Length: 228
Image 1 (tube, rainbow, N blue to C red):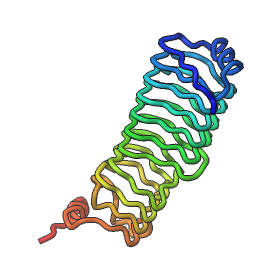
Image 2: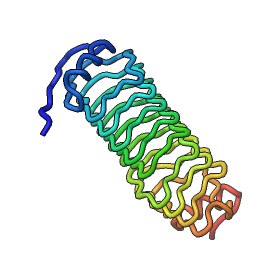
Image 3: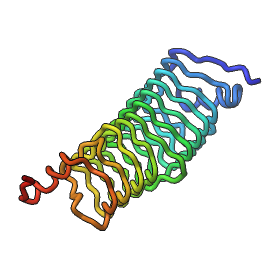
């Protein structure tokens, strides 16, 4: 069994990270470390743990970060583009305006994360999970949430163009004013979410979707109809 090595309250540069990778592969734990602005592109950091670290403007372009764990980290504008992140877990992280384009996110779990303004278009992988996350104004175009259980997800003002929500179940959260061009909701249960601003009258993309009577009345009212 690999023994973990803890690095606490250090400023981690690329050179320092390379030293740690060489000495402690898959065994490093970073607690309250400062990685702001660091360039960790194309480094192999599989299995590392990051706890209450700051990652603002850090670059992880094409890095290998499989099975990593990120807890209560703050990383505004950090860049995970093209990174390998399969089986990673992000818990209570603030990753607003982060970049994930073309990252591999198979079996990645985001729990209670802030991802406002995040760019998640063109990501690849399967079994990507979000729970109780803020994705306000995020770009999620083309992502599949088919048959997903979406708990407490706030997609307000997000770009959901081309997303697949077929047979998904929304429990709380919001789709308010989201962009839904070519988005598929067939068979989705939307009763538990705010659908203000969505054109649920588009039968092609909402076939057999389930909404409440209150939501139906609001949708008809948007077209100038009154439910008596």
